[in-house]
Length: 115
Image (cartoon, rainbow, N blue to C red; front, side, top):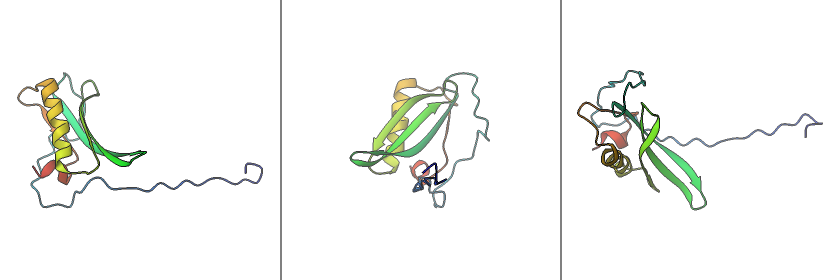
C-alpha cells in the first residue's frame, strides 16, 4: 500500500450523547469555562460517553473533581437515561460528602435536566 501511495481512510460513526434541544429547566452555567478549582469538592464536572464492549455499546457516566481531575463517581448502563447520571452523582456524594456551594457542572443535556 505504501509503495502505491494508498492510505486507509477510517470512518467513525458518531453517536450524539447530548440532547440540548429539550423542554426541561436548564440551570445557569456557573463555571463560565473556568474549570480551575483551588480546593477539592469546589467544582465537579459530569458527562456521559459510550464504550464498545464484546456485549455491545454501554454508556458510562462520570463525575470528576476539577481540583484533582480524578473520577469520584461513575455508573454504567446499556441505556442512556437520567438514572445513569443520578447513580454516578450519588456515588460521588457518598464518597466525598460535598460542602454547601459545591458546583456540579454538566453539558445540560436532557439526562441532567430531567430530575
